[in-house]
Length: 340
Image (cartoon, rainbow, N blue to C red; front, top):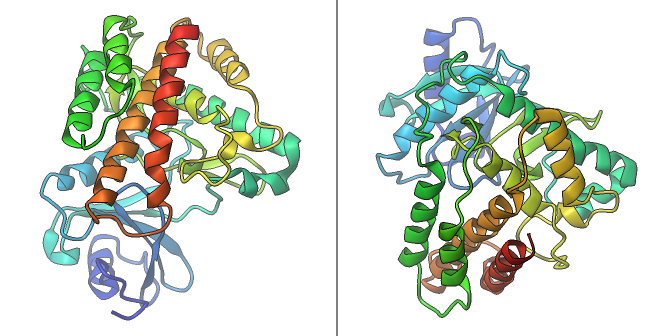
């Protein structure tokens, strides 16, 4: 494969499709490169030398269910693009597997930085770091203020029984990757199940909302929210709980999980919660449950990665340290529930 033809992307076939579906959009031959990062779907930057776009597709050797992901991701950014929520402009969805070997969609390229570590934030200094983190809250408020029915997302999920289903889903995920003793994880799962809070009115939920899933511009404002593969219609406070969790410094500077909370100037979780409550008007009195649930969910995700690592199924750096993080996340989850 040449660098212009990374695995999973055929620029010539893509060009032919765009010329047919969006005549005049592309001005010359396309070249593409794989953008690192992202949970599972593949992301490519594509250019004709003048304009730039992004292509999202399932992993190579994808299973059929992921075709559904592409349609969902394209649908949610298409619905949100006219709102105050910053998302890339969608260009086209292609479900014909003949073109790239899998369904995919194309959107405009957005310039910006996804901050993943405290080290990356440090050059901004405390004041700008604080502004970036507060902007993350404000954008979440904008997302949760969108009326799903008004933007055509009234049937985007099943909000009834959302928290109960989430808890069962992640419990099943845990059972699927059990190959060692994890002190406290069943206790945490059971405690969460005993104390389900009443959900507020449903909203569009991102599902993986954190600083490295948004692009920050040179003016420190959010240019685009990315990675909508876990989005649905459900309890908006699950997004807040995840944001609070990622805002707790772990004191593990080489952690393979985002360390932005360690950066000088990053607001404390309580300030982020207060800002969300003031701007959204929502009752956040159960935020400790949602935060503990976020610790549990991440512990399960990390244990799944650790499990695949022990089977030799992961490639890349940092996987050897993920197993050590799981007990830390379980402990934080239990402490959060106990201390409220």
